Length: 238
Image 1 (cartoon, rainbow, N blue to C red):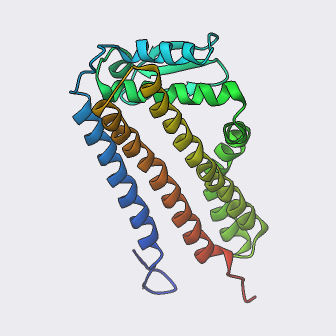
Image 2: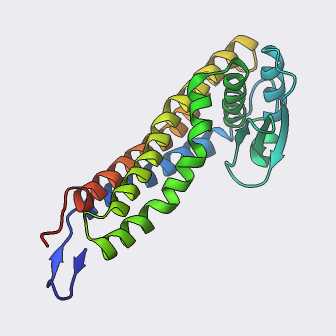
């Protein structure tokens, strides 16, 4: 991107980092959508819905205090530890496809993590408020600090630290999601909800979903690197 003004025109090469992150995110999103759409057309042999599978998986682990309920939206599935609810998008909740069952099982994997006190899940939950503040406040602080106090402003440094916390959140999220998928795939086979080729198909769905978290982490790291290059190592010469 070119900039003009009193300092003349110059190209900011660090924008390539943002572009790479955006391309990775878009590619991962396209992959998960295409994979989910493909296997959402494959009906499970048991004919169980996402809701049925979720309830059976939870009960198989002695978890009876978690509610399975539908929520609006496409791929808006999530587990909420505060309300003890596995929230499944309507396309997953009512569907009998192997893709829907895989997504439902993944969210149950988070409920299982919560049930056994899985440390990374607890750590992620603890850092959520700080990470949210960091992602929202980092850029305004960096910009205001640079305008008012220059590149060496304490506000700039605080902004970089806050954005780093958001990156740490992404870093913690990745193993939490991968572990939930492993739990899901193992139990789907053990409990007899899916079998044979269906397990491999579900593994592909959850593997594609995992790529979105890898891409999000990569994009965040690249953005942080860009901010450090632009602001972290500079000091005014006044």
